[in-house]
Image 1 (cartoon, helix red, strand yellow):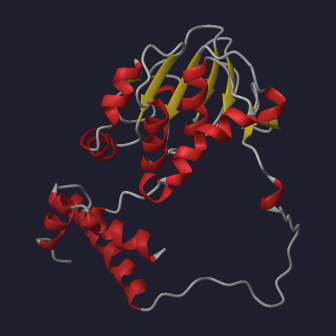
Image 2 (image 1 turned 120 degrees about the vertical axis):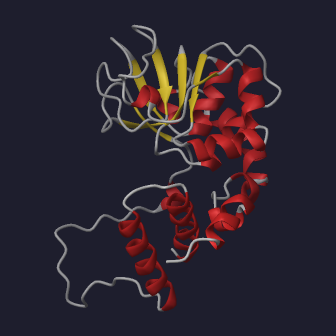
Length: 245
């Protein structure tokens, strides 16, 4: 939480410097964040709190990816139940996909050419796009033949672009309701990593194939999955120093 707020204070100061409105609202938000950072406390439930339902999941029992299957976000299955399904297109994007996921997808696609599916890549913000470009990940996407969309919702909204009619798609978007990504499509919801692997193979991988590829990512996880901390990015930190609240 502290790491997140420190980063966002710098981002909000950059927004003020760039003329975003309403300046007063941004300043109030910064002051509230700084007040909390000076004395950080977390909300806790009352000792006698009543819960309508308690759901406990032993994460150690989940040893493979879980996908949401066509075309219902509540239809969740283990990868082993749907492995081998042919994929026509893949989408890596939406606000649910942070910069670390794009780095992982890039690393999984590194050195690949002419992948067998149409791959769409759309980072959520211009800031993500800028950092990914500077780090060389756009070069990996381009070499693999990916279609890099302008930052934003892209296929996730279904009104900016659409996949081919009738396509089977693995997507990192937030919903897979009928026709959301395109007419008569069958859409699996999955992680960026799984989408990247499937785009290379033209099908959903086996659990063994998935873990084999992810071994490379996990070995370098600290670098791959680091957040975009604006207070640690020089160009943002320098601008923030000039903004007083």
